[in-house]
Image (cartoon, rainbow, N blue to C red; front, top):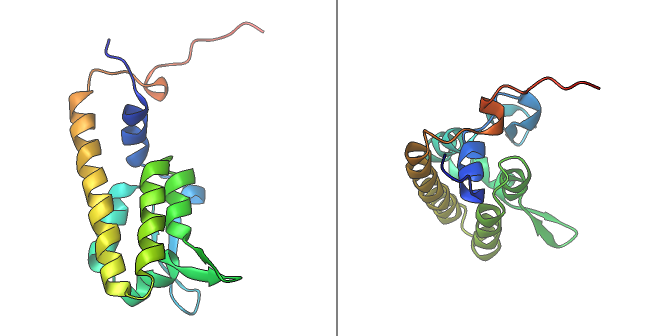
Length: 140
């Protein structure tokens, strides 16, 4: 059996979960839900189709003179990808004045990560993950 690395786990996590509690919710200026995102693939679909002004408040907010990026936090804590999260946050910090370019750069980062994960996923079809194996009964 092949060895499972951190990247294998991240690739598996990038496929997401149908759990609504973990979904990233994109809202409009009236707080109405535009869409819910559950994984990296859905994030790419949204980023490729949404207008920069619609996604921008979810990418960049100023709070107490500090930049907050809800998407970077979601990528970090839900998808478990601290590296991608940090890259998104740094791009948000440097491109906060240009929503169109910011959206494109975040899309490019996520797309490249998605391609890397797809290659990994295809290469480890024979790797068994914990949730793929039945849990043996325990005697307590």
